[in-house]
Image (tube, rainbow, N blue to C red):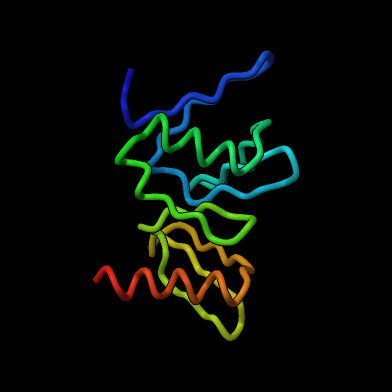
Length: 120
């Protein structure tokens, strides 16, 4: 099995997701929506905390491309292009084919910004 593919298998469905194509994960109660670069939205019956654990256990060190931001999102850090703490906005884009703007708390964005600044 390709180590860059993660499987989400339920009784009725199977998703084969290439991790580099994931832009972000969004919590929705007991579900997590996986949003891909082609704008496909894959709802998975798993809460965000469990998704975070699944990523860590399946991807190991490769899970570091994802960052939990606030209570609602896990984002792919390679697509972060703009953090605006005043407007509570995070912009994710590949610079070519997609742009997603997420509403995120000021505190969560400040923490994310500090992580980026301190790891450069």
